[in-house]
Length: 332
Image (tube, rainbow, N blue to C red):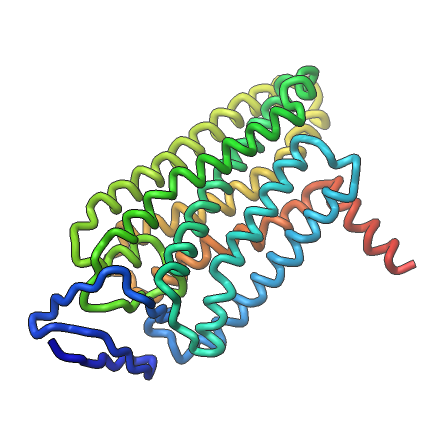
């Protein structure tokens, strides 16, 4: 056994143990090394500008949404409770990846402790699943409000909303637990370098020197459960909503009713289009450059938390009016 050092393009010497056969195994390495965006290291500072801008928008926008809903009594209803959950989820999701990514871009701080890496992995995937579940809950709320308006207050009581929210968070928490558990049990060999800005699930387990088929298949199962089933239930809800809308006698009534769904539909499209695009590129884009994989993975995690507060601030009349009142009131 001898100590060797691997010189990376990032200009950093990373010592780790290797055997002559290049198969040395070390269980639970103390640290992983995040490369950032491989191939674009010289542009890290420039790439950090849009990343940081999106993070600031996500923080300010979602905190504003939380503040408005908490303060305005008229917004204490099922749709806004789910929006409150969505804003909270977006804050956690963006904060799970951006601070570490920016520290890589700005300070070349690439090391991340093994346990911190698994924790980040869990939070990223857990809250992505939770966000998808919240969109399903919001679609159900729109279905009840439009198709059964007289029963909306009796079906979606505060107690029912709390139970739905709890179920959504438990589903996300439980479904993702095997990801870090399986990753922790695996032996790692040859390298502790992750060619990514954050501890993405498959990027971590690919460093293991054991069979990772269980992790890979379970990851596909989670994707199917989340994207497949959630999109199915959202689509089913909106089929019923469209039937009810087209059954209205007046055009202005149809437009007004559909307008109550516009912000939700835009948020859904922003989330699922970016998620599906990232999944397709990851699974079938073997010839796609690695830096494009990493950028796409960041986009699907950063764009929805950035766009959601903008979408609801622009398209939701109650939120928009309250925002306008806050700005004009502060100026007087």
